[in-house]
Length: 92
Image (tube, rainbow, N blue to C red; front, side, top):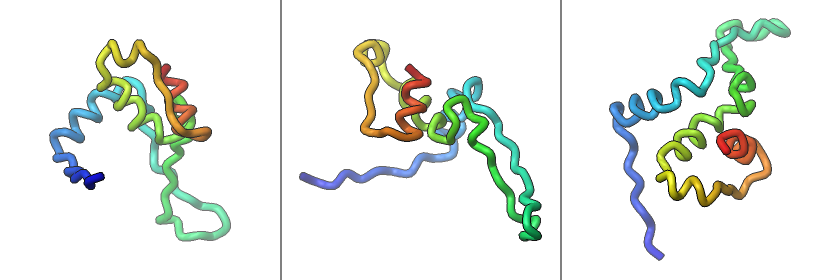
């Protein structure tokens, strides 16, 4: 088995992917952490606000969108019992 070389996406590809998922994902805010006297420069990004409850919806939804209609009709599956599975179920 040979190792595959995976190229990093270029900015244009990232912007195109962001455009594809724009109507589904929630633009989550950065929220300052003020609890327990910790550094107020610490920011939280509450991805729990996403439709499937985590950031996984971003990549999973984009991957499902890129499937051919015929492939999507055959069904979706994942080897996950966590947030990836939850995001894929939401997409289904």
